[in-house]
Length: 410
Image (cartoon, rainbow, N blue to C red; front, side, top):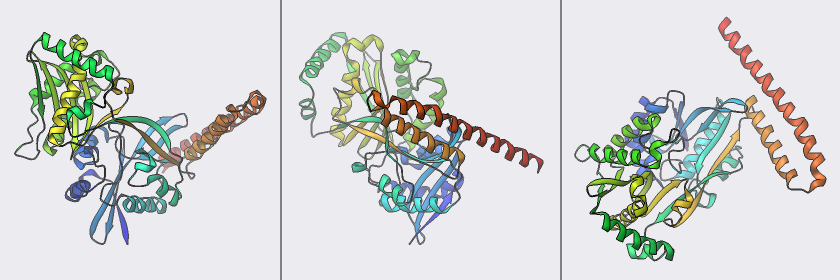
């Protein structure tokens, strides 16, 4: 018989570190993003406006699984909603329960959530893989726990599946791309001496040095790339996230999860790929190349060097992350969808309003599929229901203000 304990404080969660690390090693599709090391550093930067909800699943005294969750406060058209979700915040592709028995772990966690007070407006298990690739069976288990949710595809990520040799990989690439590869190789040779350097620390006290000179070279390339002039991006040198990336790099080195790849042209850094590693799987966190060397194809040459060396090291996959699919298409082996599974809390007025809005949206989508004879129904739907939704929001806001006033009086 499983029982669940709730941990809401990171200091208390630190006592789980040994169990967490052991469970992660046995977790299907484990990544660095699910480690306690990741959560600890992430929380230091972004946890102030969140509420930690770690569900620890035990069988007797033994910890058999962990489901890390957080309550985010997100601004929506319905006001500030409290979202109970995984603590990934779009830094990676996928997340899920930790441990060798993900289905049983998630089932126990959902049962616990269904039997305790709901201090959230929406349970939204984001960053889940497609149902046929989900070891936890998230959609099925949510339905069984009366948290029925319709999967919503939010993005795609792209993978390179590494074969037994670079030749085998190149044989699967488009003929035009292979021709370009040969041209890039000749062109870069004409420009000078090319050198590839990779740093992958084992971790721990003996070999967890951050090698800041290499990381600083990645930043120098990022500044000279097209991303360097971006004011709203999340490249390594973007000020709102730069300190976070540097702190996470130190953490990843201590954990043996950092993977720095650099190309040097005449001893000047011209391209980089910064990855997080767990086991034989890599996640391409950030990449960049010198704009001046772009015509020589240094970006693609960077990926090929990584592929060749990763095959030699026995790596299995490289997740290139969401976004920029057209640029990644010549390199990738497959794309995979990323889903979210939202369930609105009917006891919360915002949750109820979200349900009403979803029903309206679903009906509008259905109506829009019909021919012009359905226009009158569409107009009636859009003319009446949004007013009811707006009125419900006004009533909820008034209720919140009255509750605040009563608390102040007390």
